[in-house]
Length: 236
Length: 236
DNA sequence: GTTCACACGTGAGGC
DNA sequence: TGCCTCACGTGTGAA
Image 1 (tube, helix red, strand yellow):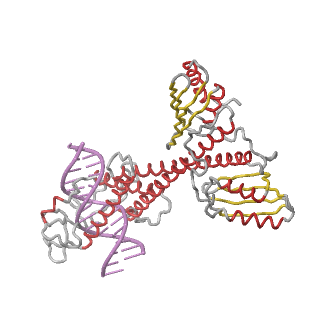
Image 2: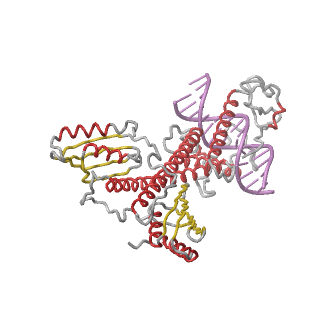
Image 3: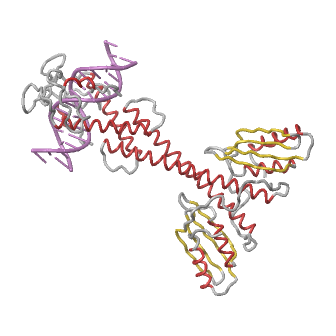
C-alpha cells in the first residue's frame, strides 16, 4: 500500500479546505499541475478552488473502500504483506482455516457430549437401585470409542521413599485416567490427590501417589515404563 | 459490480488479439472511441492495435484484485449486496462471528472435558477398591457447574398399559439425564432401554420405561408434568 | 437529471 | 533501469 497516498503533496496547492466535514478531497489538482484536460463549468483553465462534486464522491468512495480493507486487515491475524490483493488473500485463507477449525471443534464437542452422556447413563444405572440395567441394552461399555491417547510429557518425582509426584500431559481425554488407574492398580499404588488443568489442546495431570514398597527408585522406573506403554494400542 | 465490465463493447474495435495468453486486454480503446488523449510512441492519433505494456499490466492487476474479491465473496455465506465495499464488510462481520463462535466452542469444550475428567475421577475412585478417595480433595461433587437445561420437545407414548416410550430433546447436556432419573425415581419407574442421538446443537433422548401401576393414562400425565418441571430452576 | 459503482488510462513513488 | 502498487480523474451504464 502506498504510504504517502499522494495526498500530502498537493496540500499546498489549494487555499480553501472548509467544505464538507473537511478530510475530504485534500488533493485538488490545478490546471498547471495536471497533464490531463479538465473542463470546468466556469473557466477553461481551471484554477478554481472548488472541485466538482463527482470528484468528491469518487474520492470518498475510494477512501471508504480503503478503510474497509484496513478494517479487514485488522481482524485477520498473521498478515504477511500490506498488499491489497494479499490482504484479501490472507483473509480468504483465514476464513477457510476458521471454518475447518469450527468443524473440528463441533465434531469434538459432539463426541465429548456423547461419551459424557453414556458415562452418565452407566453411572446412573449402577448407582440408583430403583433403576436397573437392561440385558437388552444395545451398548457395549467396553469400547464405545477408541481414542488415540498420546502422552506428551511425563515427569515422575520421588518425594521421600514412599510418595511420588507424577505429572504428565496428554492430548486426548477419554480413558486416559482409567489407563492410569490400571497402571497404579497393577503397581499397587494409592492416589492421595489428583489435579487436572484443562487447556485448549491438552490436559495436564498431576498426581500424588503412595506406595508400600521401600525401593523408591525401582518403583519410579516401573511407573515410567508403565505410563510409557499407554501410547501402545489397547489389549483387552 | 458492473456486469458488462465494458469489455465486450470494444471487442470489434481491434484486430489482433493474439498477444499474451489471450483473455487479457480485450478492450483497447481507439482514438475515436475515447475522449481521453493517449500519446502513442508511433503516432499521434492512435489507431495502433498493440497497446503498451503498462496498460496490460494494470488491467491484469485490476482483474486479479477483482478475482480475489470474488473468491472472498465465495467463502462468505449470507452475502447481501454485490458491492465491493459490502463484500469486504460482510467478510469482516463473518470473520468476527466465526471468532466469537470459536471462542464459545472452545470454552464449551474445556468445560465439557473438565467435567468429563471429574466424572472419571469420581467414578474410578468409587469403583476401584485399590484406590481410595482422599479426605483433602478440594472438589465439590454437588454443583461444579450450573447449566441451564431446556427441554425443547417432549413426547410420551403409552405402549400397552405398563410401558411408555419417552422422547425429548434438550439443548444442554450435563445433568439433564440425572434430572430425568430423579423423575423416574420419584414415579417409581424402571428404564428398559435408553438411546441418545447427538446433533450439533441439541441432544435427542429416547427412553423405554416400565411402571408397576395399572392406570396408564395417569402415569402419562405424571411423566409429562414432571419433565415439564425440569426447565424450572433447581431446588436442592 | 442525479446518484452510484465500476473500469479505465495515467503519473508517481518504491524496490 | 524495469516492475509493481497505488491514487487520481474521467467516462459509462444502471438504478
